[in-house]
Length: 405
Ligand SMILES: Cc1ncc(COP(=O)(O)O)c(C=O)c1O
Image (cartoon, rainbow, N blue to C red; front, side, top):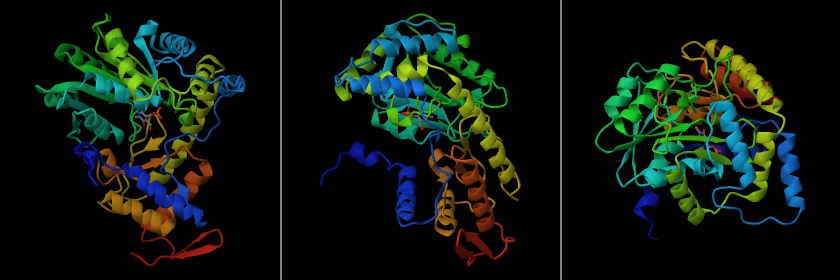
């Protein structure tokens, strides 16, 4: 069969394979603990459900404008005013099928073949593949000091003749790091100086802990005209626990939004109408679900970090946002894929290998599940890796016996 060069260049979602193996094991009745997930387990806000079902109950579920319904654009404009202190017009807004499509159509819109896109390591697994799909070259930038945030100089050093854009994701998937205000401010300035697009992936910016406030990139921009190359992306997926609704958006200059809309109209048309109405409900409705999700995540984070810190040799930096931690397990095994496979095979705990996020030796361990799962998953991991643990561990009725060192 002939498969295109482009299709062949796109990696299988690394997280998918492990997820599939775990799902198969679970079907067979294996006691899997899933600490690899990327979605909160809470329910969608009631206002989202009411709006969505009311729309579906009319029985008239039609195509929508390619860039989203007026009511959703209005809700996004209001959200942008409230959270970014920025007034935008409907022509600066496009609603997409999740933040993922918003980023994807933005990349299609701005990249010429072989243009380079810079982003810090560790990075969301999808960035390199999305950049490649849009014909570009991914340029991850690793901090020399091994931290989760490169210096502005390191980013600037990666900028070359073919650089078209920088993507920043703060709080960051997978590290949970919130980039410093100075760093974001300097990158905004760098992009303006070098005439680069800056895609701010703010997907997790309401899920921040310890009274840290999210950095508003617009504060540091000096160009507030329609020639601004700042593209701000967000979604209802994480903050409202609405991953399955698939609604995200981008705020950008009118020309970019018009081009993104053209592309989206040929690709998928407007996002699903009931999902857009659900997003309107979430954005305009009672907001307490965001705060309760944030607080329960912060609590889960504390429990997970405490468990990680109790493991000799594990180096963990406390995540300041998201629902991911990214500890360094290289003291136990350098190859993170092998380590993730080992943990799934031996103690039925699913975690994600750090190498797929650009940092070998690390594991991405999520804390979006229940406290019980977090604690039990960590107990199993500790048992599997600590040579001083007792020889046996019970998973319910089942007795596990260590047959490894
Ligand atoms: C950093 C980041 N950006 C964007 C997305 C995509 O969000 P959505 O589900 O709205 O497409 C994700 C999802 O995991 C993410 O982690």
